[in-house]
Amino acid sequence: MKYLLRDNSTVTDPRLDRLVQFDERSKNFPIMKLIPEAKRKFRSYTWRCNTCLNQGPYGSCVGHGIAHELAARPSEVPGMTTKYAKEEIYWKAQMEDPWPGGDYPNASPKYEGTSVLAGVKVAQRLGWFDSYYWAFSLEELIYGVGHRGPAVLGTYWFDGMMQPDEKGLIHPEGGKAGGHCYLVKGVDINRELLRILNSWGKPWGIDGECYITFDDMRYLLELEGEAVFFEKRHKIPRIAA
Image (cartoon, rainbow, N blue to C red; front, side):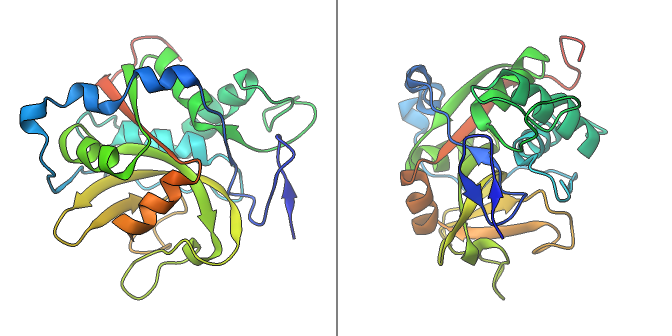
């Protein structure tokens, strides 16, 4: 079965509803601006996140990926919930992105999906962080996660990524199932792995997490992928939601 999204694309799983939206101005804010050349050395690090949300059957992955970042170190927001991720981030992003309709109350037409960019703009306006920076390559992502914080990722999601293998790895193999948003919370330089926190609950993968190889992530980023980092985070939003 296929599900129609707001940009007229289709997915095979209703949870995979990240839509592609790029702003050329994002290239003016690369994460590498914040990493001095003297410190540009690959570094293994994992950012703690004690929250593992479950988006259920809804296409609110963008809201959940962002909510997981807010709940993670270096600035852990306590009490982050699925309700907040869906209603305060996802629904509001749908109201502002370029596509008609949405999943929020009284939306017409009723469709799922939004972009990472729209979700990030909403979260910034809500006051959770002051600015955001981007990575569009594997190397930039590794530097960013190793030195600055976890990253909210938007990439395509393949059939081979629906369940991790016996080693906890997902693989971009088989058919393209749709687009997904998730959190990359760690990098292991020695094993060449990135650690992912998904939004499908703790029963999925390894307590809600999985790993992906550097090579596989490089492929996903080259395929209209994106990674965004929040800067000057706040445990309490500076603007009322």
